[in-house]
Image 1 (tube, helix red, strand yellow):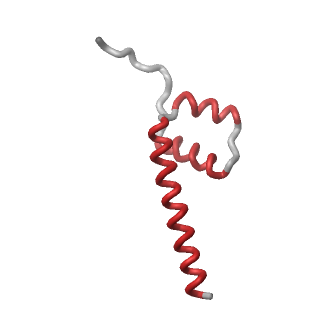
Image 2: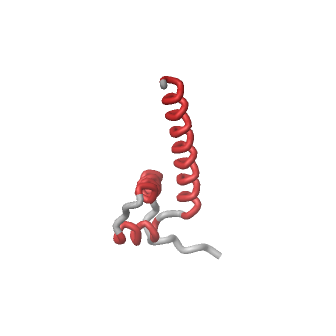
Image 3: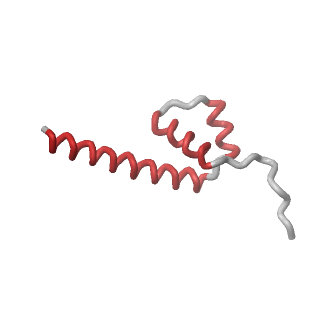
Length: 71
């Protein structure tokens, strides 16, 4: 049994990063959101969001350590 090829376009890594970035910022057009629903893979979104949270937290920790050390 073969699976027919999907006609929906695949999202690139950059598309996923942009969608997660806009979600972190909190601003997203409904039309862009609906478009992303059709082409983004939920597992990719979770992985990119997890990586973004880690980068954000590490950045905050480094910023606080820098400010405390210089103050």
